[in-house]
Image (cartoon, rainbow, N blue to C red):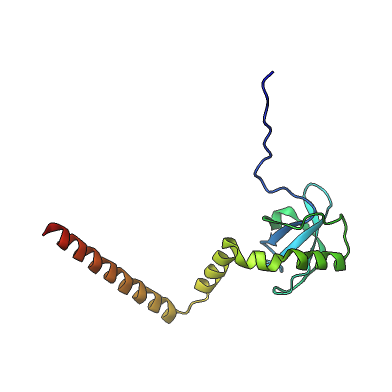
Length: 147
């Protein structure tokens, strides 16, 4: 009889200990951790972050959350605020988030969004200068290749 290999899906599962990012509402852009699954549309979250403003324990609809790849393993269901905070610190969730490409992209997007008109002009000029230098180097290479 042939052996069958079963592979787990690569999807991020809604599970206790999964770190989530709020996308809508007053907590938009903040991190929290799933403490309890209420039903198929809502979860109980708690956000003991030190770097971002803390999120009080609350029920949140899954439509307003994005599941991140960060997990706090072995977090007990309905863990208290202190236990969640200790696990958050132990896992270094804030550092993991800050080092992720996702967080860096969000920060860059926010920085660009807050530029003034003059700052956007300076960025445009710097891009033009860089493009000019690249074209000059390519022209030099092409000229040396032809001769």
